[in-house]
Image (tube, rainbow, N blue to C red; front, side, top):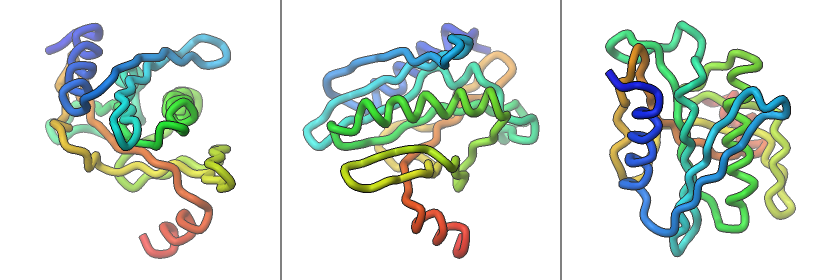
Length: 168
């Protein structure tokens, strides 16, 4: 099984293989500097791909496990317009601080509510999670005592959230 620094390196290689273009990595920390996550970005012609490195450090609730029974941890990927890359990077990092502070689970179909995401003149206050739909290898990574899965995250509006709750 892989050790923590090997997991980070493997995740970075997986992101690098999936996305091509100019690469940048920024570390985000919570207010108390107790938690951190790196956000890996690749600029392409039609936007910026973002992926986290470090989510594997933060356990989800014990009820979530991989198909082989290993406890599951999550890394996030998304794509945004260039002008929203910094905002979305900060939002992705805050997901892990939310996981640690409030012991949240993430899975396809999950929503984190109450974000203050302002995009132009639209408020998109929720973050929706689904299986990655970008090209690339998004299979789970097995590590020392846990598995790392990838989820795609994107902001949704209040009306989209209401529709999701009403219609599944």
